[in-house]
Image (cartoon, rainbow, N blue to C red; front, side, top):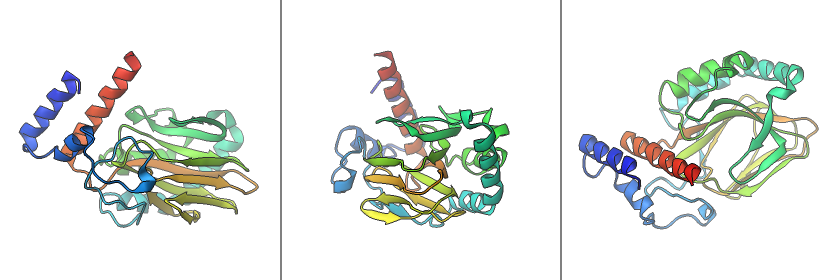
Length: 250
């Protein structure tokens, strides 16, 4: 760890107790223990988190208010996104995943690089407002990641892969879903139901397909895994930020 990360860890332990970061320490020392075979591609696995690929969107009290707000406001979110897609297709960029860049996978960012994207407030006002109130202001969003509208063009697929870690999870609001779309996580395939949310652990291998005749759009929100603690979240945010800084400086 960098001196900056070590200092932050020491401050967290002084505030929350000497054992408060035991799981983070085990992860950084590569002592995370057994992992599910379908998490093999994840770089970091925080020990002690339930190895559950699919989560009940209403199963976590900290996340439930966001789920309810998004689902109840789905008509407005869908209308605003559809109008933007028709009038300003240039507002959607090719999505750049850490593994690849895809022209047939388009994104409009609401939250990125640790903060809300101000210009998104006018483009998608309902989603922006709800994200701020129920995910950003409540501390549920993972500041290391993002929230964006994810639009998969007809015929496009996202190849099977694992994301980098298990200490955040991915919430999907199904905004505009044609027939022929699917999401598979840890070998179990589900289909988006328009206006409803799905929640899954993307450290497990997952893939998505749009075999429909129009774009498939979801609102994605990267949230802290509900079983992580406040001191762990603070330490993980510092640790990953420092790792990214070093990579950027190298």
